[in-house]
View 1 (spheres, rainbow, N blue to C red):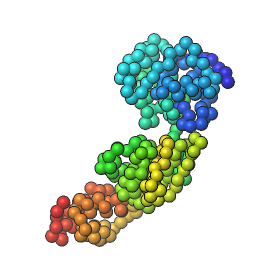
View 2: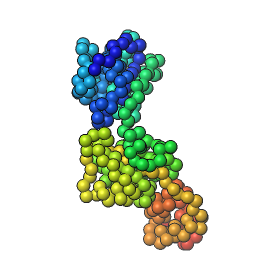
View 3: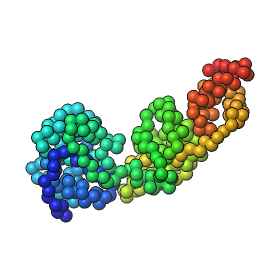
View 4: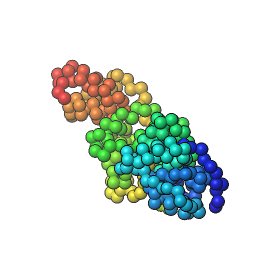
Length: 291
């Protein structure tokens, strides 16, 4: 393939790269790869392989690494190239730059210094997983990676539990079983979900079911590869105050105000603060009140 060689205007060009299948690259991205004065990549080896597959030569152009560990050192160098009127192209290791990607700081710096920022859209694991999940796509929230520890992860899940949208998370295969367990507890065990792994690759797999089903399926042997977890929106309905009091009183008989509040908020998918405040009232009325 010989993309048209063109002189690009100065600016930072963001290109989306394949998340698996090399042929998912767009024709425009190939044109930009052939024409940019300076190439910057989260993983230079991955970009070189991609260019080789599509018959693109680096020539005498520089190819600079840019990632989480060298961003602060490399940004001034890249900004200097832009200041000299050069066209600079940045590519993520896979997927769309700026989305859970170190390119965010680079793009923000370019905008802050008044340089043009140009995006060539293409593959995205978030959008692809949404289309594979079979869950509603009319409104969704991408929540990135959750915290590593269970306590912080549950807190983060609680913050998005009431969002009236499909939720999308990136997750490590080492943590996905624990993440699904926590999600089932906080978001609701019966909430529909999908686990998408190795999207567009040879061993692509989509597991669909409830959060409880998916958690159980990962308990014995964690799936391998790149993983996206998609969770359907909650359906908390309108629980009456009388129903809430009934459920809370049962929970308070078995545990503290704090534990009962956590349990009921997760079970009924209600704001934890609202449940906790009501639990305090009930505990005081019933002669309790302990945390």
